[in-house]
Amino acid sequence: MNEIIYGIHVIEEFIKNKSNKILCILFLKSRKDIKFKKLILISNEKNIKIKFVDKKFLNKITNNKKHQGIVAYIKNSKILKEPFLLKMLENKKNYFFLILDGIMDPRNLGSCIRSAYIFGVQAVIIRKNRSAKISSAVKKVASGSLDLIPLIYVTNLVRTINLLKKYNIQIIGTSRKAQLDICNKKLKQSIAVVMGSENLGISRLVKENCDNILNIPTVKNNLPLNISVATGICIFEIIRKNYLNKFNVS
Image (cartoon, rainbow, N blue to C red; front, side):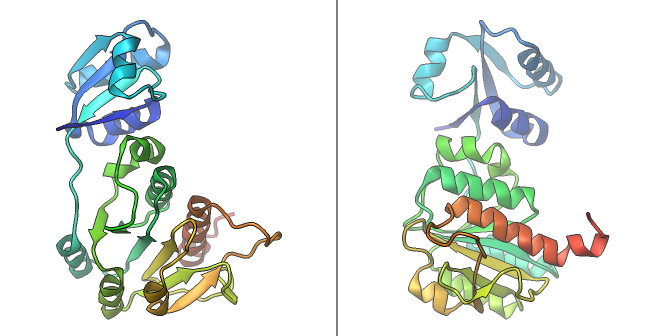
């Protein structure tokens, strides 16, 4: 069964970067604004099949989600596993991975993936069990990034972490209770940052196998950061330390 995605920004990203994955785009026939006309024009230029339908049909196939009058059928996303990661490790010198340990909320998962793509993470490694499944909700929040960055599902995060260590990749875990903060820790060029679940954080065995456990310094410490916000901050700090400072970015 084919997947569906919905929302203007999500589908626009697919049209621009993954048009070969689109099977058909459904446009709300009553909508005539410039944005829609532009998307229809680009779709025709890329020979993407389009149809015009009523709102009732779009509501039905999206279970009354906020589709903004546009839905697309796409080919099923390819599930990547450990062999793909091994191939990546053999072909690169410096690595930047995001490891997600038990992220259960679909919106948080989508947001973490989106931040990873925007800041140049090479792949997102996801714990196969006790994690949110890739759904329409995840796709919408990820805003087209889902199929633009490799998502690698693994059954054993500890084993995967120890594999990364063999390639001299620094494993950074995160915790509110950590003594060191990410802003003051020297980081390697090759790095993987581990983000834990919303309620439980990083699992015990994963934490024990990290090279360092770091926190995000905040002004108010009585409330935790949302996991997707914390992920974006950590990824950006790594980019700032390892890349931006070299180019005198102001």
